[in-house]
Length: 255
Image (cartoon, one colour):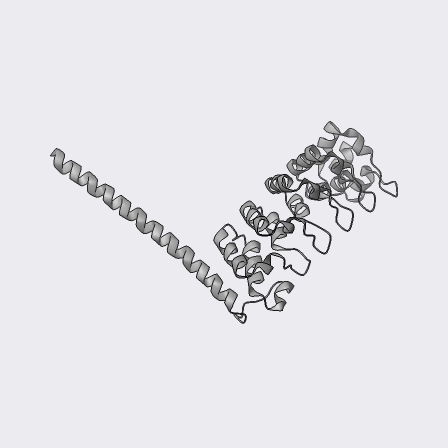
């Protein structure tokens, strides 16, 4: 093939590629803009007819409904939608569901670090918000095994890890509830006192792990803090009592 012709064809191919990329970028931008416009329309229309699934939206604040809905459905990956909600009504960062949990709680529960970062930048006080049970985003993240989220929160405000809920439970109790070993070990390394602290009934995280049959946590404690396996609650019930009453025979055998 003639060199000049080859060069000309290459240039045309490169030009088409550039044009195709521009078209793709424009389409993506248009889609994002359309999404933002839909949200804005919902925010402006206080009678849009959407089903209000959180008590907080009974006040007629549609922005809070949209914000909670995106978190709950896992759509908060699209940060622009959240920004749109907040920009239209800053109050929606403080509004809560019927249990007192905010968007910050839900973002932590579903592992959306970028959303937590954004909400924290808008209102840093959201990180310490408690729901009606006295639980913070730390409790929720621990319960659902979101170690990455806990690490992010620890960098922002380590003191919040010492907060207990109305039952006296800390994050380690919640990690033990669902057997999230990596989270439990993270808490043990960062805040050692958490894994031996009793709740209002004298139950340590080890009691909770035994009651729920999480042998992995019991084994980890045996290897690192065996003395914690001897803990008794306020009626002198041991881990063995809890495991037996819950029918957790593997834990019973291990103990």
